[in-house]
Image (cartoon, rainbow, N blue to C red; front, side, top):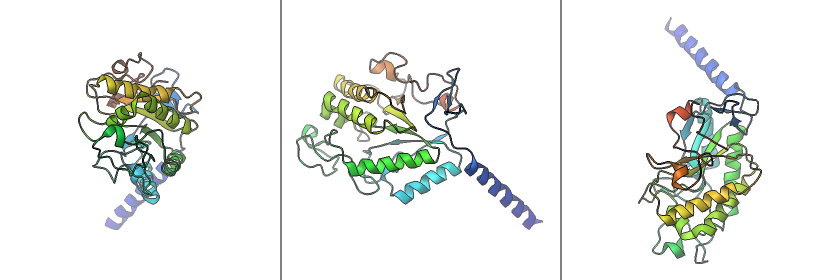
Length: 277
């Protein structure tokens, strides 16, 4: 009897896994439902967001990130959240990708950037965000395409700013780069992924009380992102500090970017303001 029960359980497990793996992948890009309350794919099939954080996934070798994404799909998840450039020292050798490539080539003083995120003078030693390293971004290209092929939506921070007064994010570098370079970086990354269909752009990043210089830099990044016409992935949302309103904070009118951090009701498809075009 024990053997029969075990075999029955195994059969159920195999059937469940088969159903997950054989489920029809969504047809990206996503869009709002006709009533504006949830997301659907291009065939109008509802896409209830079930996601997991994968902050440092681009730091993994190819085989490892494929294993992670396969595991993600096998557990029924359809989305991940991550930073496309890593800064947090708790991660896996930031800012390098799984091939050991750095995201940018030059420092603000014009010399070669080694990838160091420790500075004595940020205005000189921080990376110049307008000097992308093609090797790094080709790695990102491949990762995003792999996620799309597996039906995974990516909530992607172009520059997670980090918790206030911490070394988790890119706010010091954005400020050091200034509005012109920050806007250029936003435009560049939006242009590069203009035809990528499975992105929701993540803005801010756990920080709420911006100084005027910080607000200018983050606002410039957003302006750059939104300046590229014809993006296949034109949806934005934001993760501000607790209790803050992302749209009000940066001076964008309601509807231009998401109004609040992604809460549980958005994951349940109940908040029509969660992701706006």
